[in-house]
Length: 371
Length: 98
Image (cartoon, rainbow over all chains, first blue to last red; front, side, top):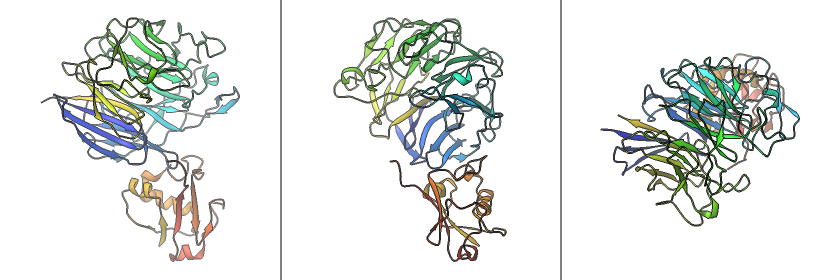
């Protein structure tokens, strides 16, 4: 029978939420790695029992954990992320040169074709790859050594590489995004990169249309149309129909177009979801109402989805990696909040139910659809 | 045998309970103790000192015999009582954060 496994990373551990295909009753396991920050947990699309988790701590640094049984047991694997060569400097918040320093792994993206290959997006921004199940890591340094590297600057959360998207139709194509450098694309499996930020307009930087320097919060893609990308930028929801070569704003009638999370329906490539957040200094929903917005037209026309979500006195945030979808016949949508709730919808967002209410602040939500 | 007391989170990471006892070749120093510790528990590499620089992580400190050894040279000999195994080397996490 089909089922769903929701992998939740929080400020104080990881949780695994499991249900059958009805998605009515949920088993909750965790906290795994109690007391540690779990920035991201994600399963391999090749082998759903193979999971990777980024575990970190201000005291003890970075760990990578691997599971071969769907999260029942874990083993620590390689945690050595060494920049290729002398990493040099990037810009600090005040514009001064600041040395590149490893801080943590924000995002783990397992390969679409090999369970032992996994990519890691780190802070300070760089992309790493492991081909041996996360035991050993090698930087794909063509990204960091892109000529614009010394101009990159951290966003409020740090200079993190937080989004990695692998093209299912073109194994050589990879998209990544960095706060606050912008989006980049490689067409040679990560060896060389080009910025793909044309069309982005960011009023908060000296040149609003600069080649790099945009605070891209997250990018989503539907696997059937890998050349179409949807972006939640700091402000603005954007869309590209040409693999990022040019972006157009599709914020349309959103009540605010600031936000972090964005995702695409599993079966409808033009149906997308965002969670509008009031502003860059007020990281909570507008008017205290937690509303997911859905567009069935690839942007511009948005409808508020509120059924089952708190519509008063709600001041949580939904972070960039904290929304995901399942691929059951009726698409499930899930998101986690900094208030510790994980909400699920088994009807593509029409109605919502809290799966858990009182976890630590949720950093990431990933969903596996199990056969 | 050299005795080492680890913070609770590192004991969990290493799947080890209680004090660690290590054979350490002389001279017994912070560096040689940590080398032996990481040899026995490879998952602790990078958690107490940085991978490349081997610098102590900033939120950790080393104590023994009531003395703070955090700022001593990692190659300084440890107190006789630690070498003799009558006192442990304590690796302690800062009381910080929530």
